[in-house]
Length: 422
Image (cartoon, rainbow, N blue to C red; front, side, top):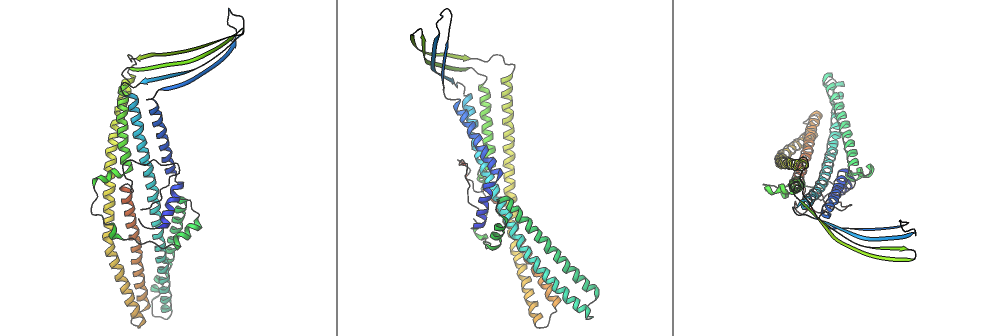
């Protein structure tokens, strides 16, 4: 956790309006409805029927009023497990849909975290660019004064003026990039831009203790914490169940029906009541000739199973690759941090020494401004490196599943909005 309340709030706002998260939630509800339908196929059915009529039926010429009501039950005995296999496939797909909901949540959180890090880095670099522009402008003024006094060649003064103009253009470009980053974050979170700017610019940037997050190795079980891998695994299980269902469709089917009802008839002032019931028939259906339809359905189910197995293996390979790449980038950024910090500290020390010499009259203003620019460039590199390191941590967080437990996924409620930012 970064203990950054601004980031946590922005993630919650982004999750609230994210179309990908809404789509994932909708797919969970669809999968749950499909599972309910599949379960219902294993249970008996019960229907109520009622009717009423009035008319004349020859040879009786007196009008008669007739009413009847009854219950009709039916049950298909799942002898060879076709319906049970269909239910198992629906259950597996529901679990996979729930995992993909978690993946969508993690993706939104990671995207917001990256955008916030990019924006804060941009603002740091904008500050460096503005200070650099001020430094170059001061150098240009001193050079022009020296040129007018005859101590500096016109070409040198022109070069200093060009350098100052270039710095102003760089600062303007950096400011434009920050404005774009602000608007991107507004689109992600739905927050008003003035309020968002105030949050980002006034809130302190939280520190990050690298020592607390040192990773020596990751166990292979980390793959089970990836929602996409879990979903691919559930797809394999669902496809396997569908193969069993297709096989069972080629075997006999047994069904049982029954009815109970009552009828009432009134003719010429005479009322007749009748109660009926029946048990059966017990019907056996044996497929004989279907033109190869059921065999083709089984072949198609087996082909889908082979496809899901191939996709699962590819997903596992991709997961391993993403984790390894994230670790490599993280290790590289952490390894460069010490050198970059040492370089920046060295340039700051050199600037302070040059400034002391300048105050003593032993260094020129040009030397001072040159040392200032070098120190500012080192600070800019440090800010960029910090962003790279944060991006590597976010990539690793996403690559290992974003904190998802990997087993017994919790079904999202219609308004579930997790509020943790790691």
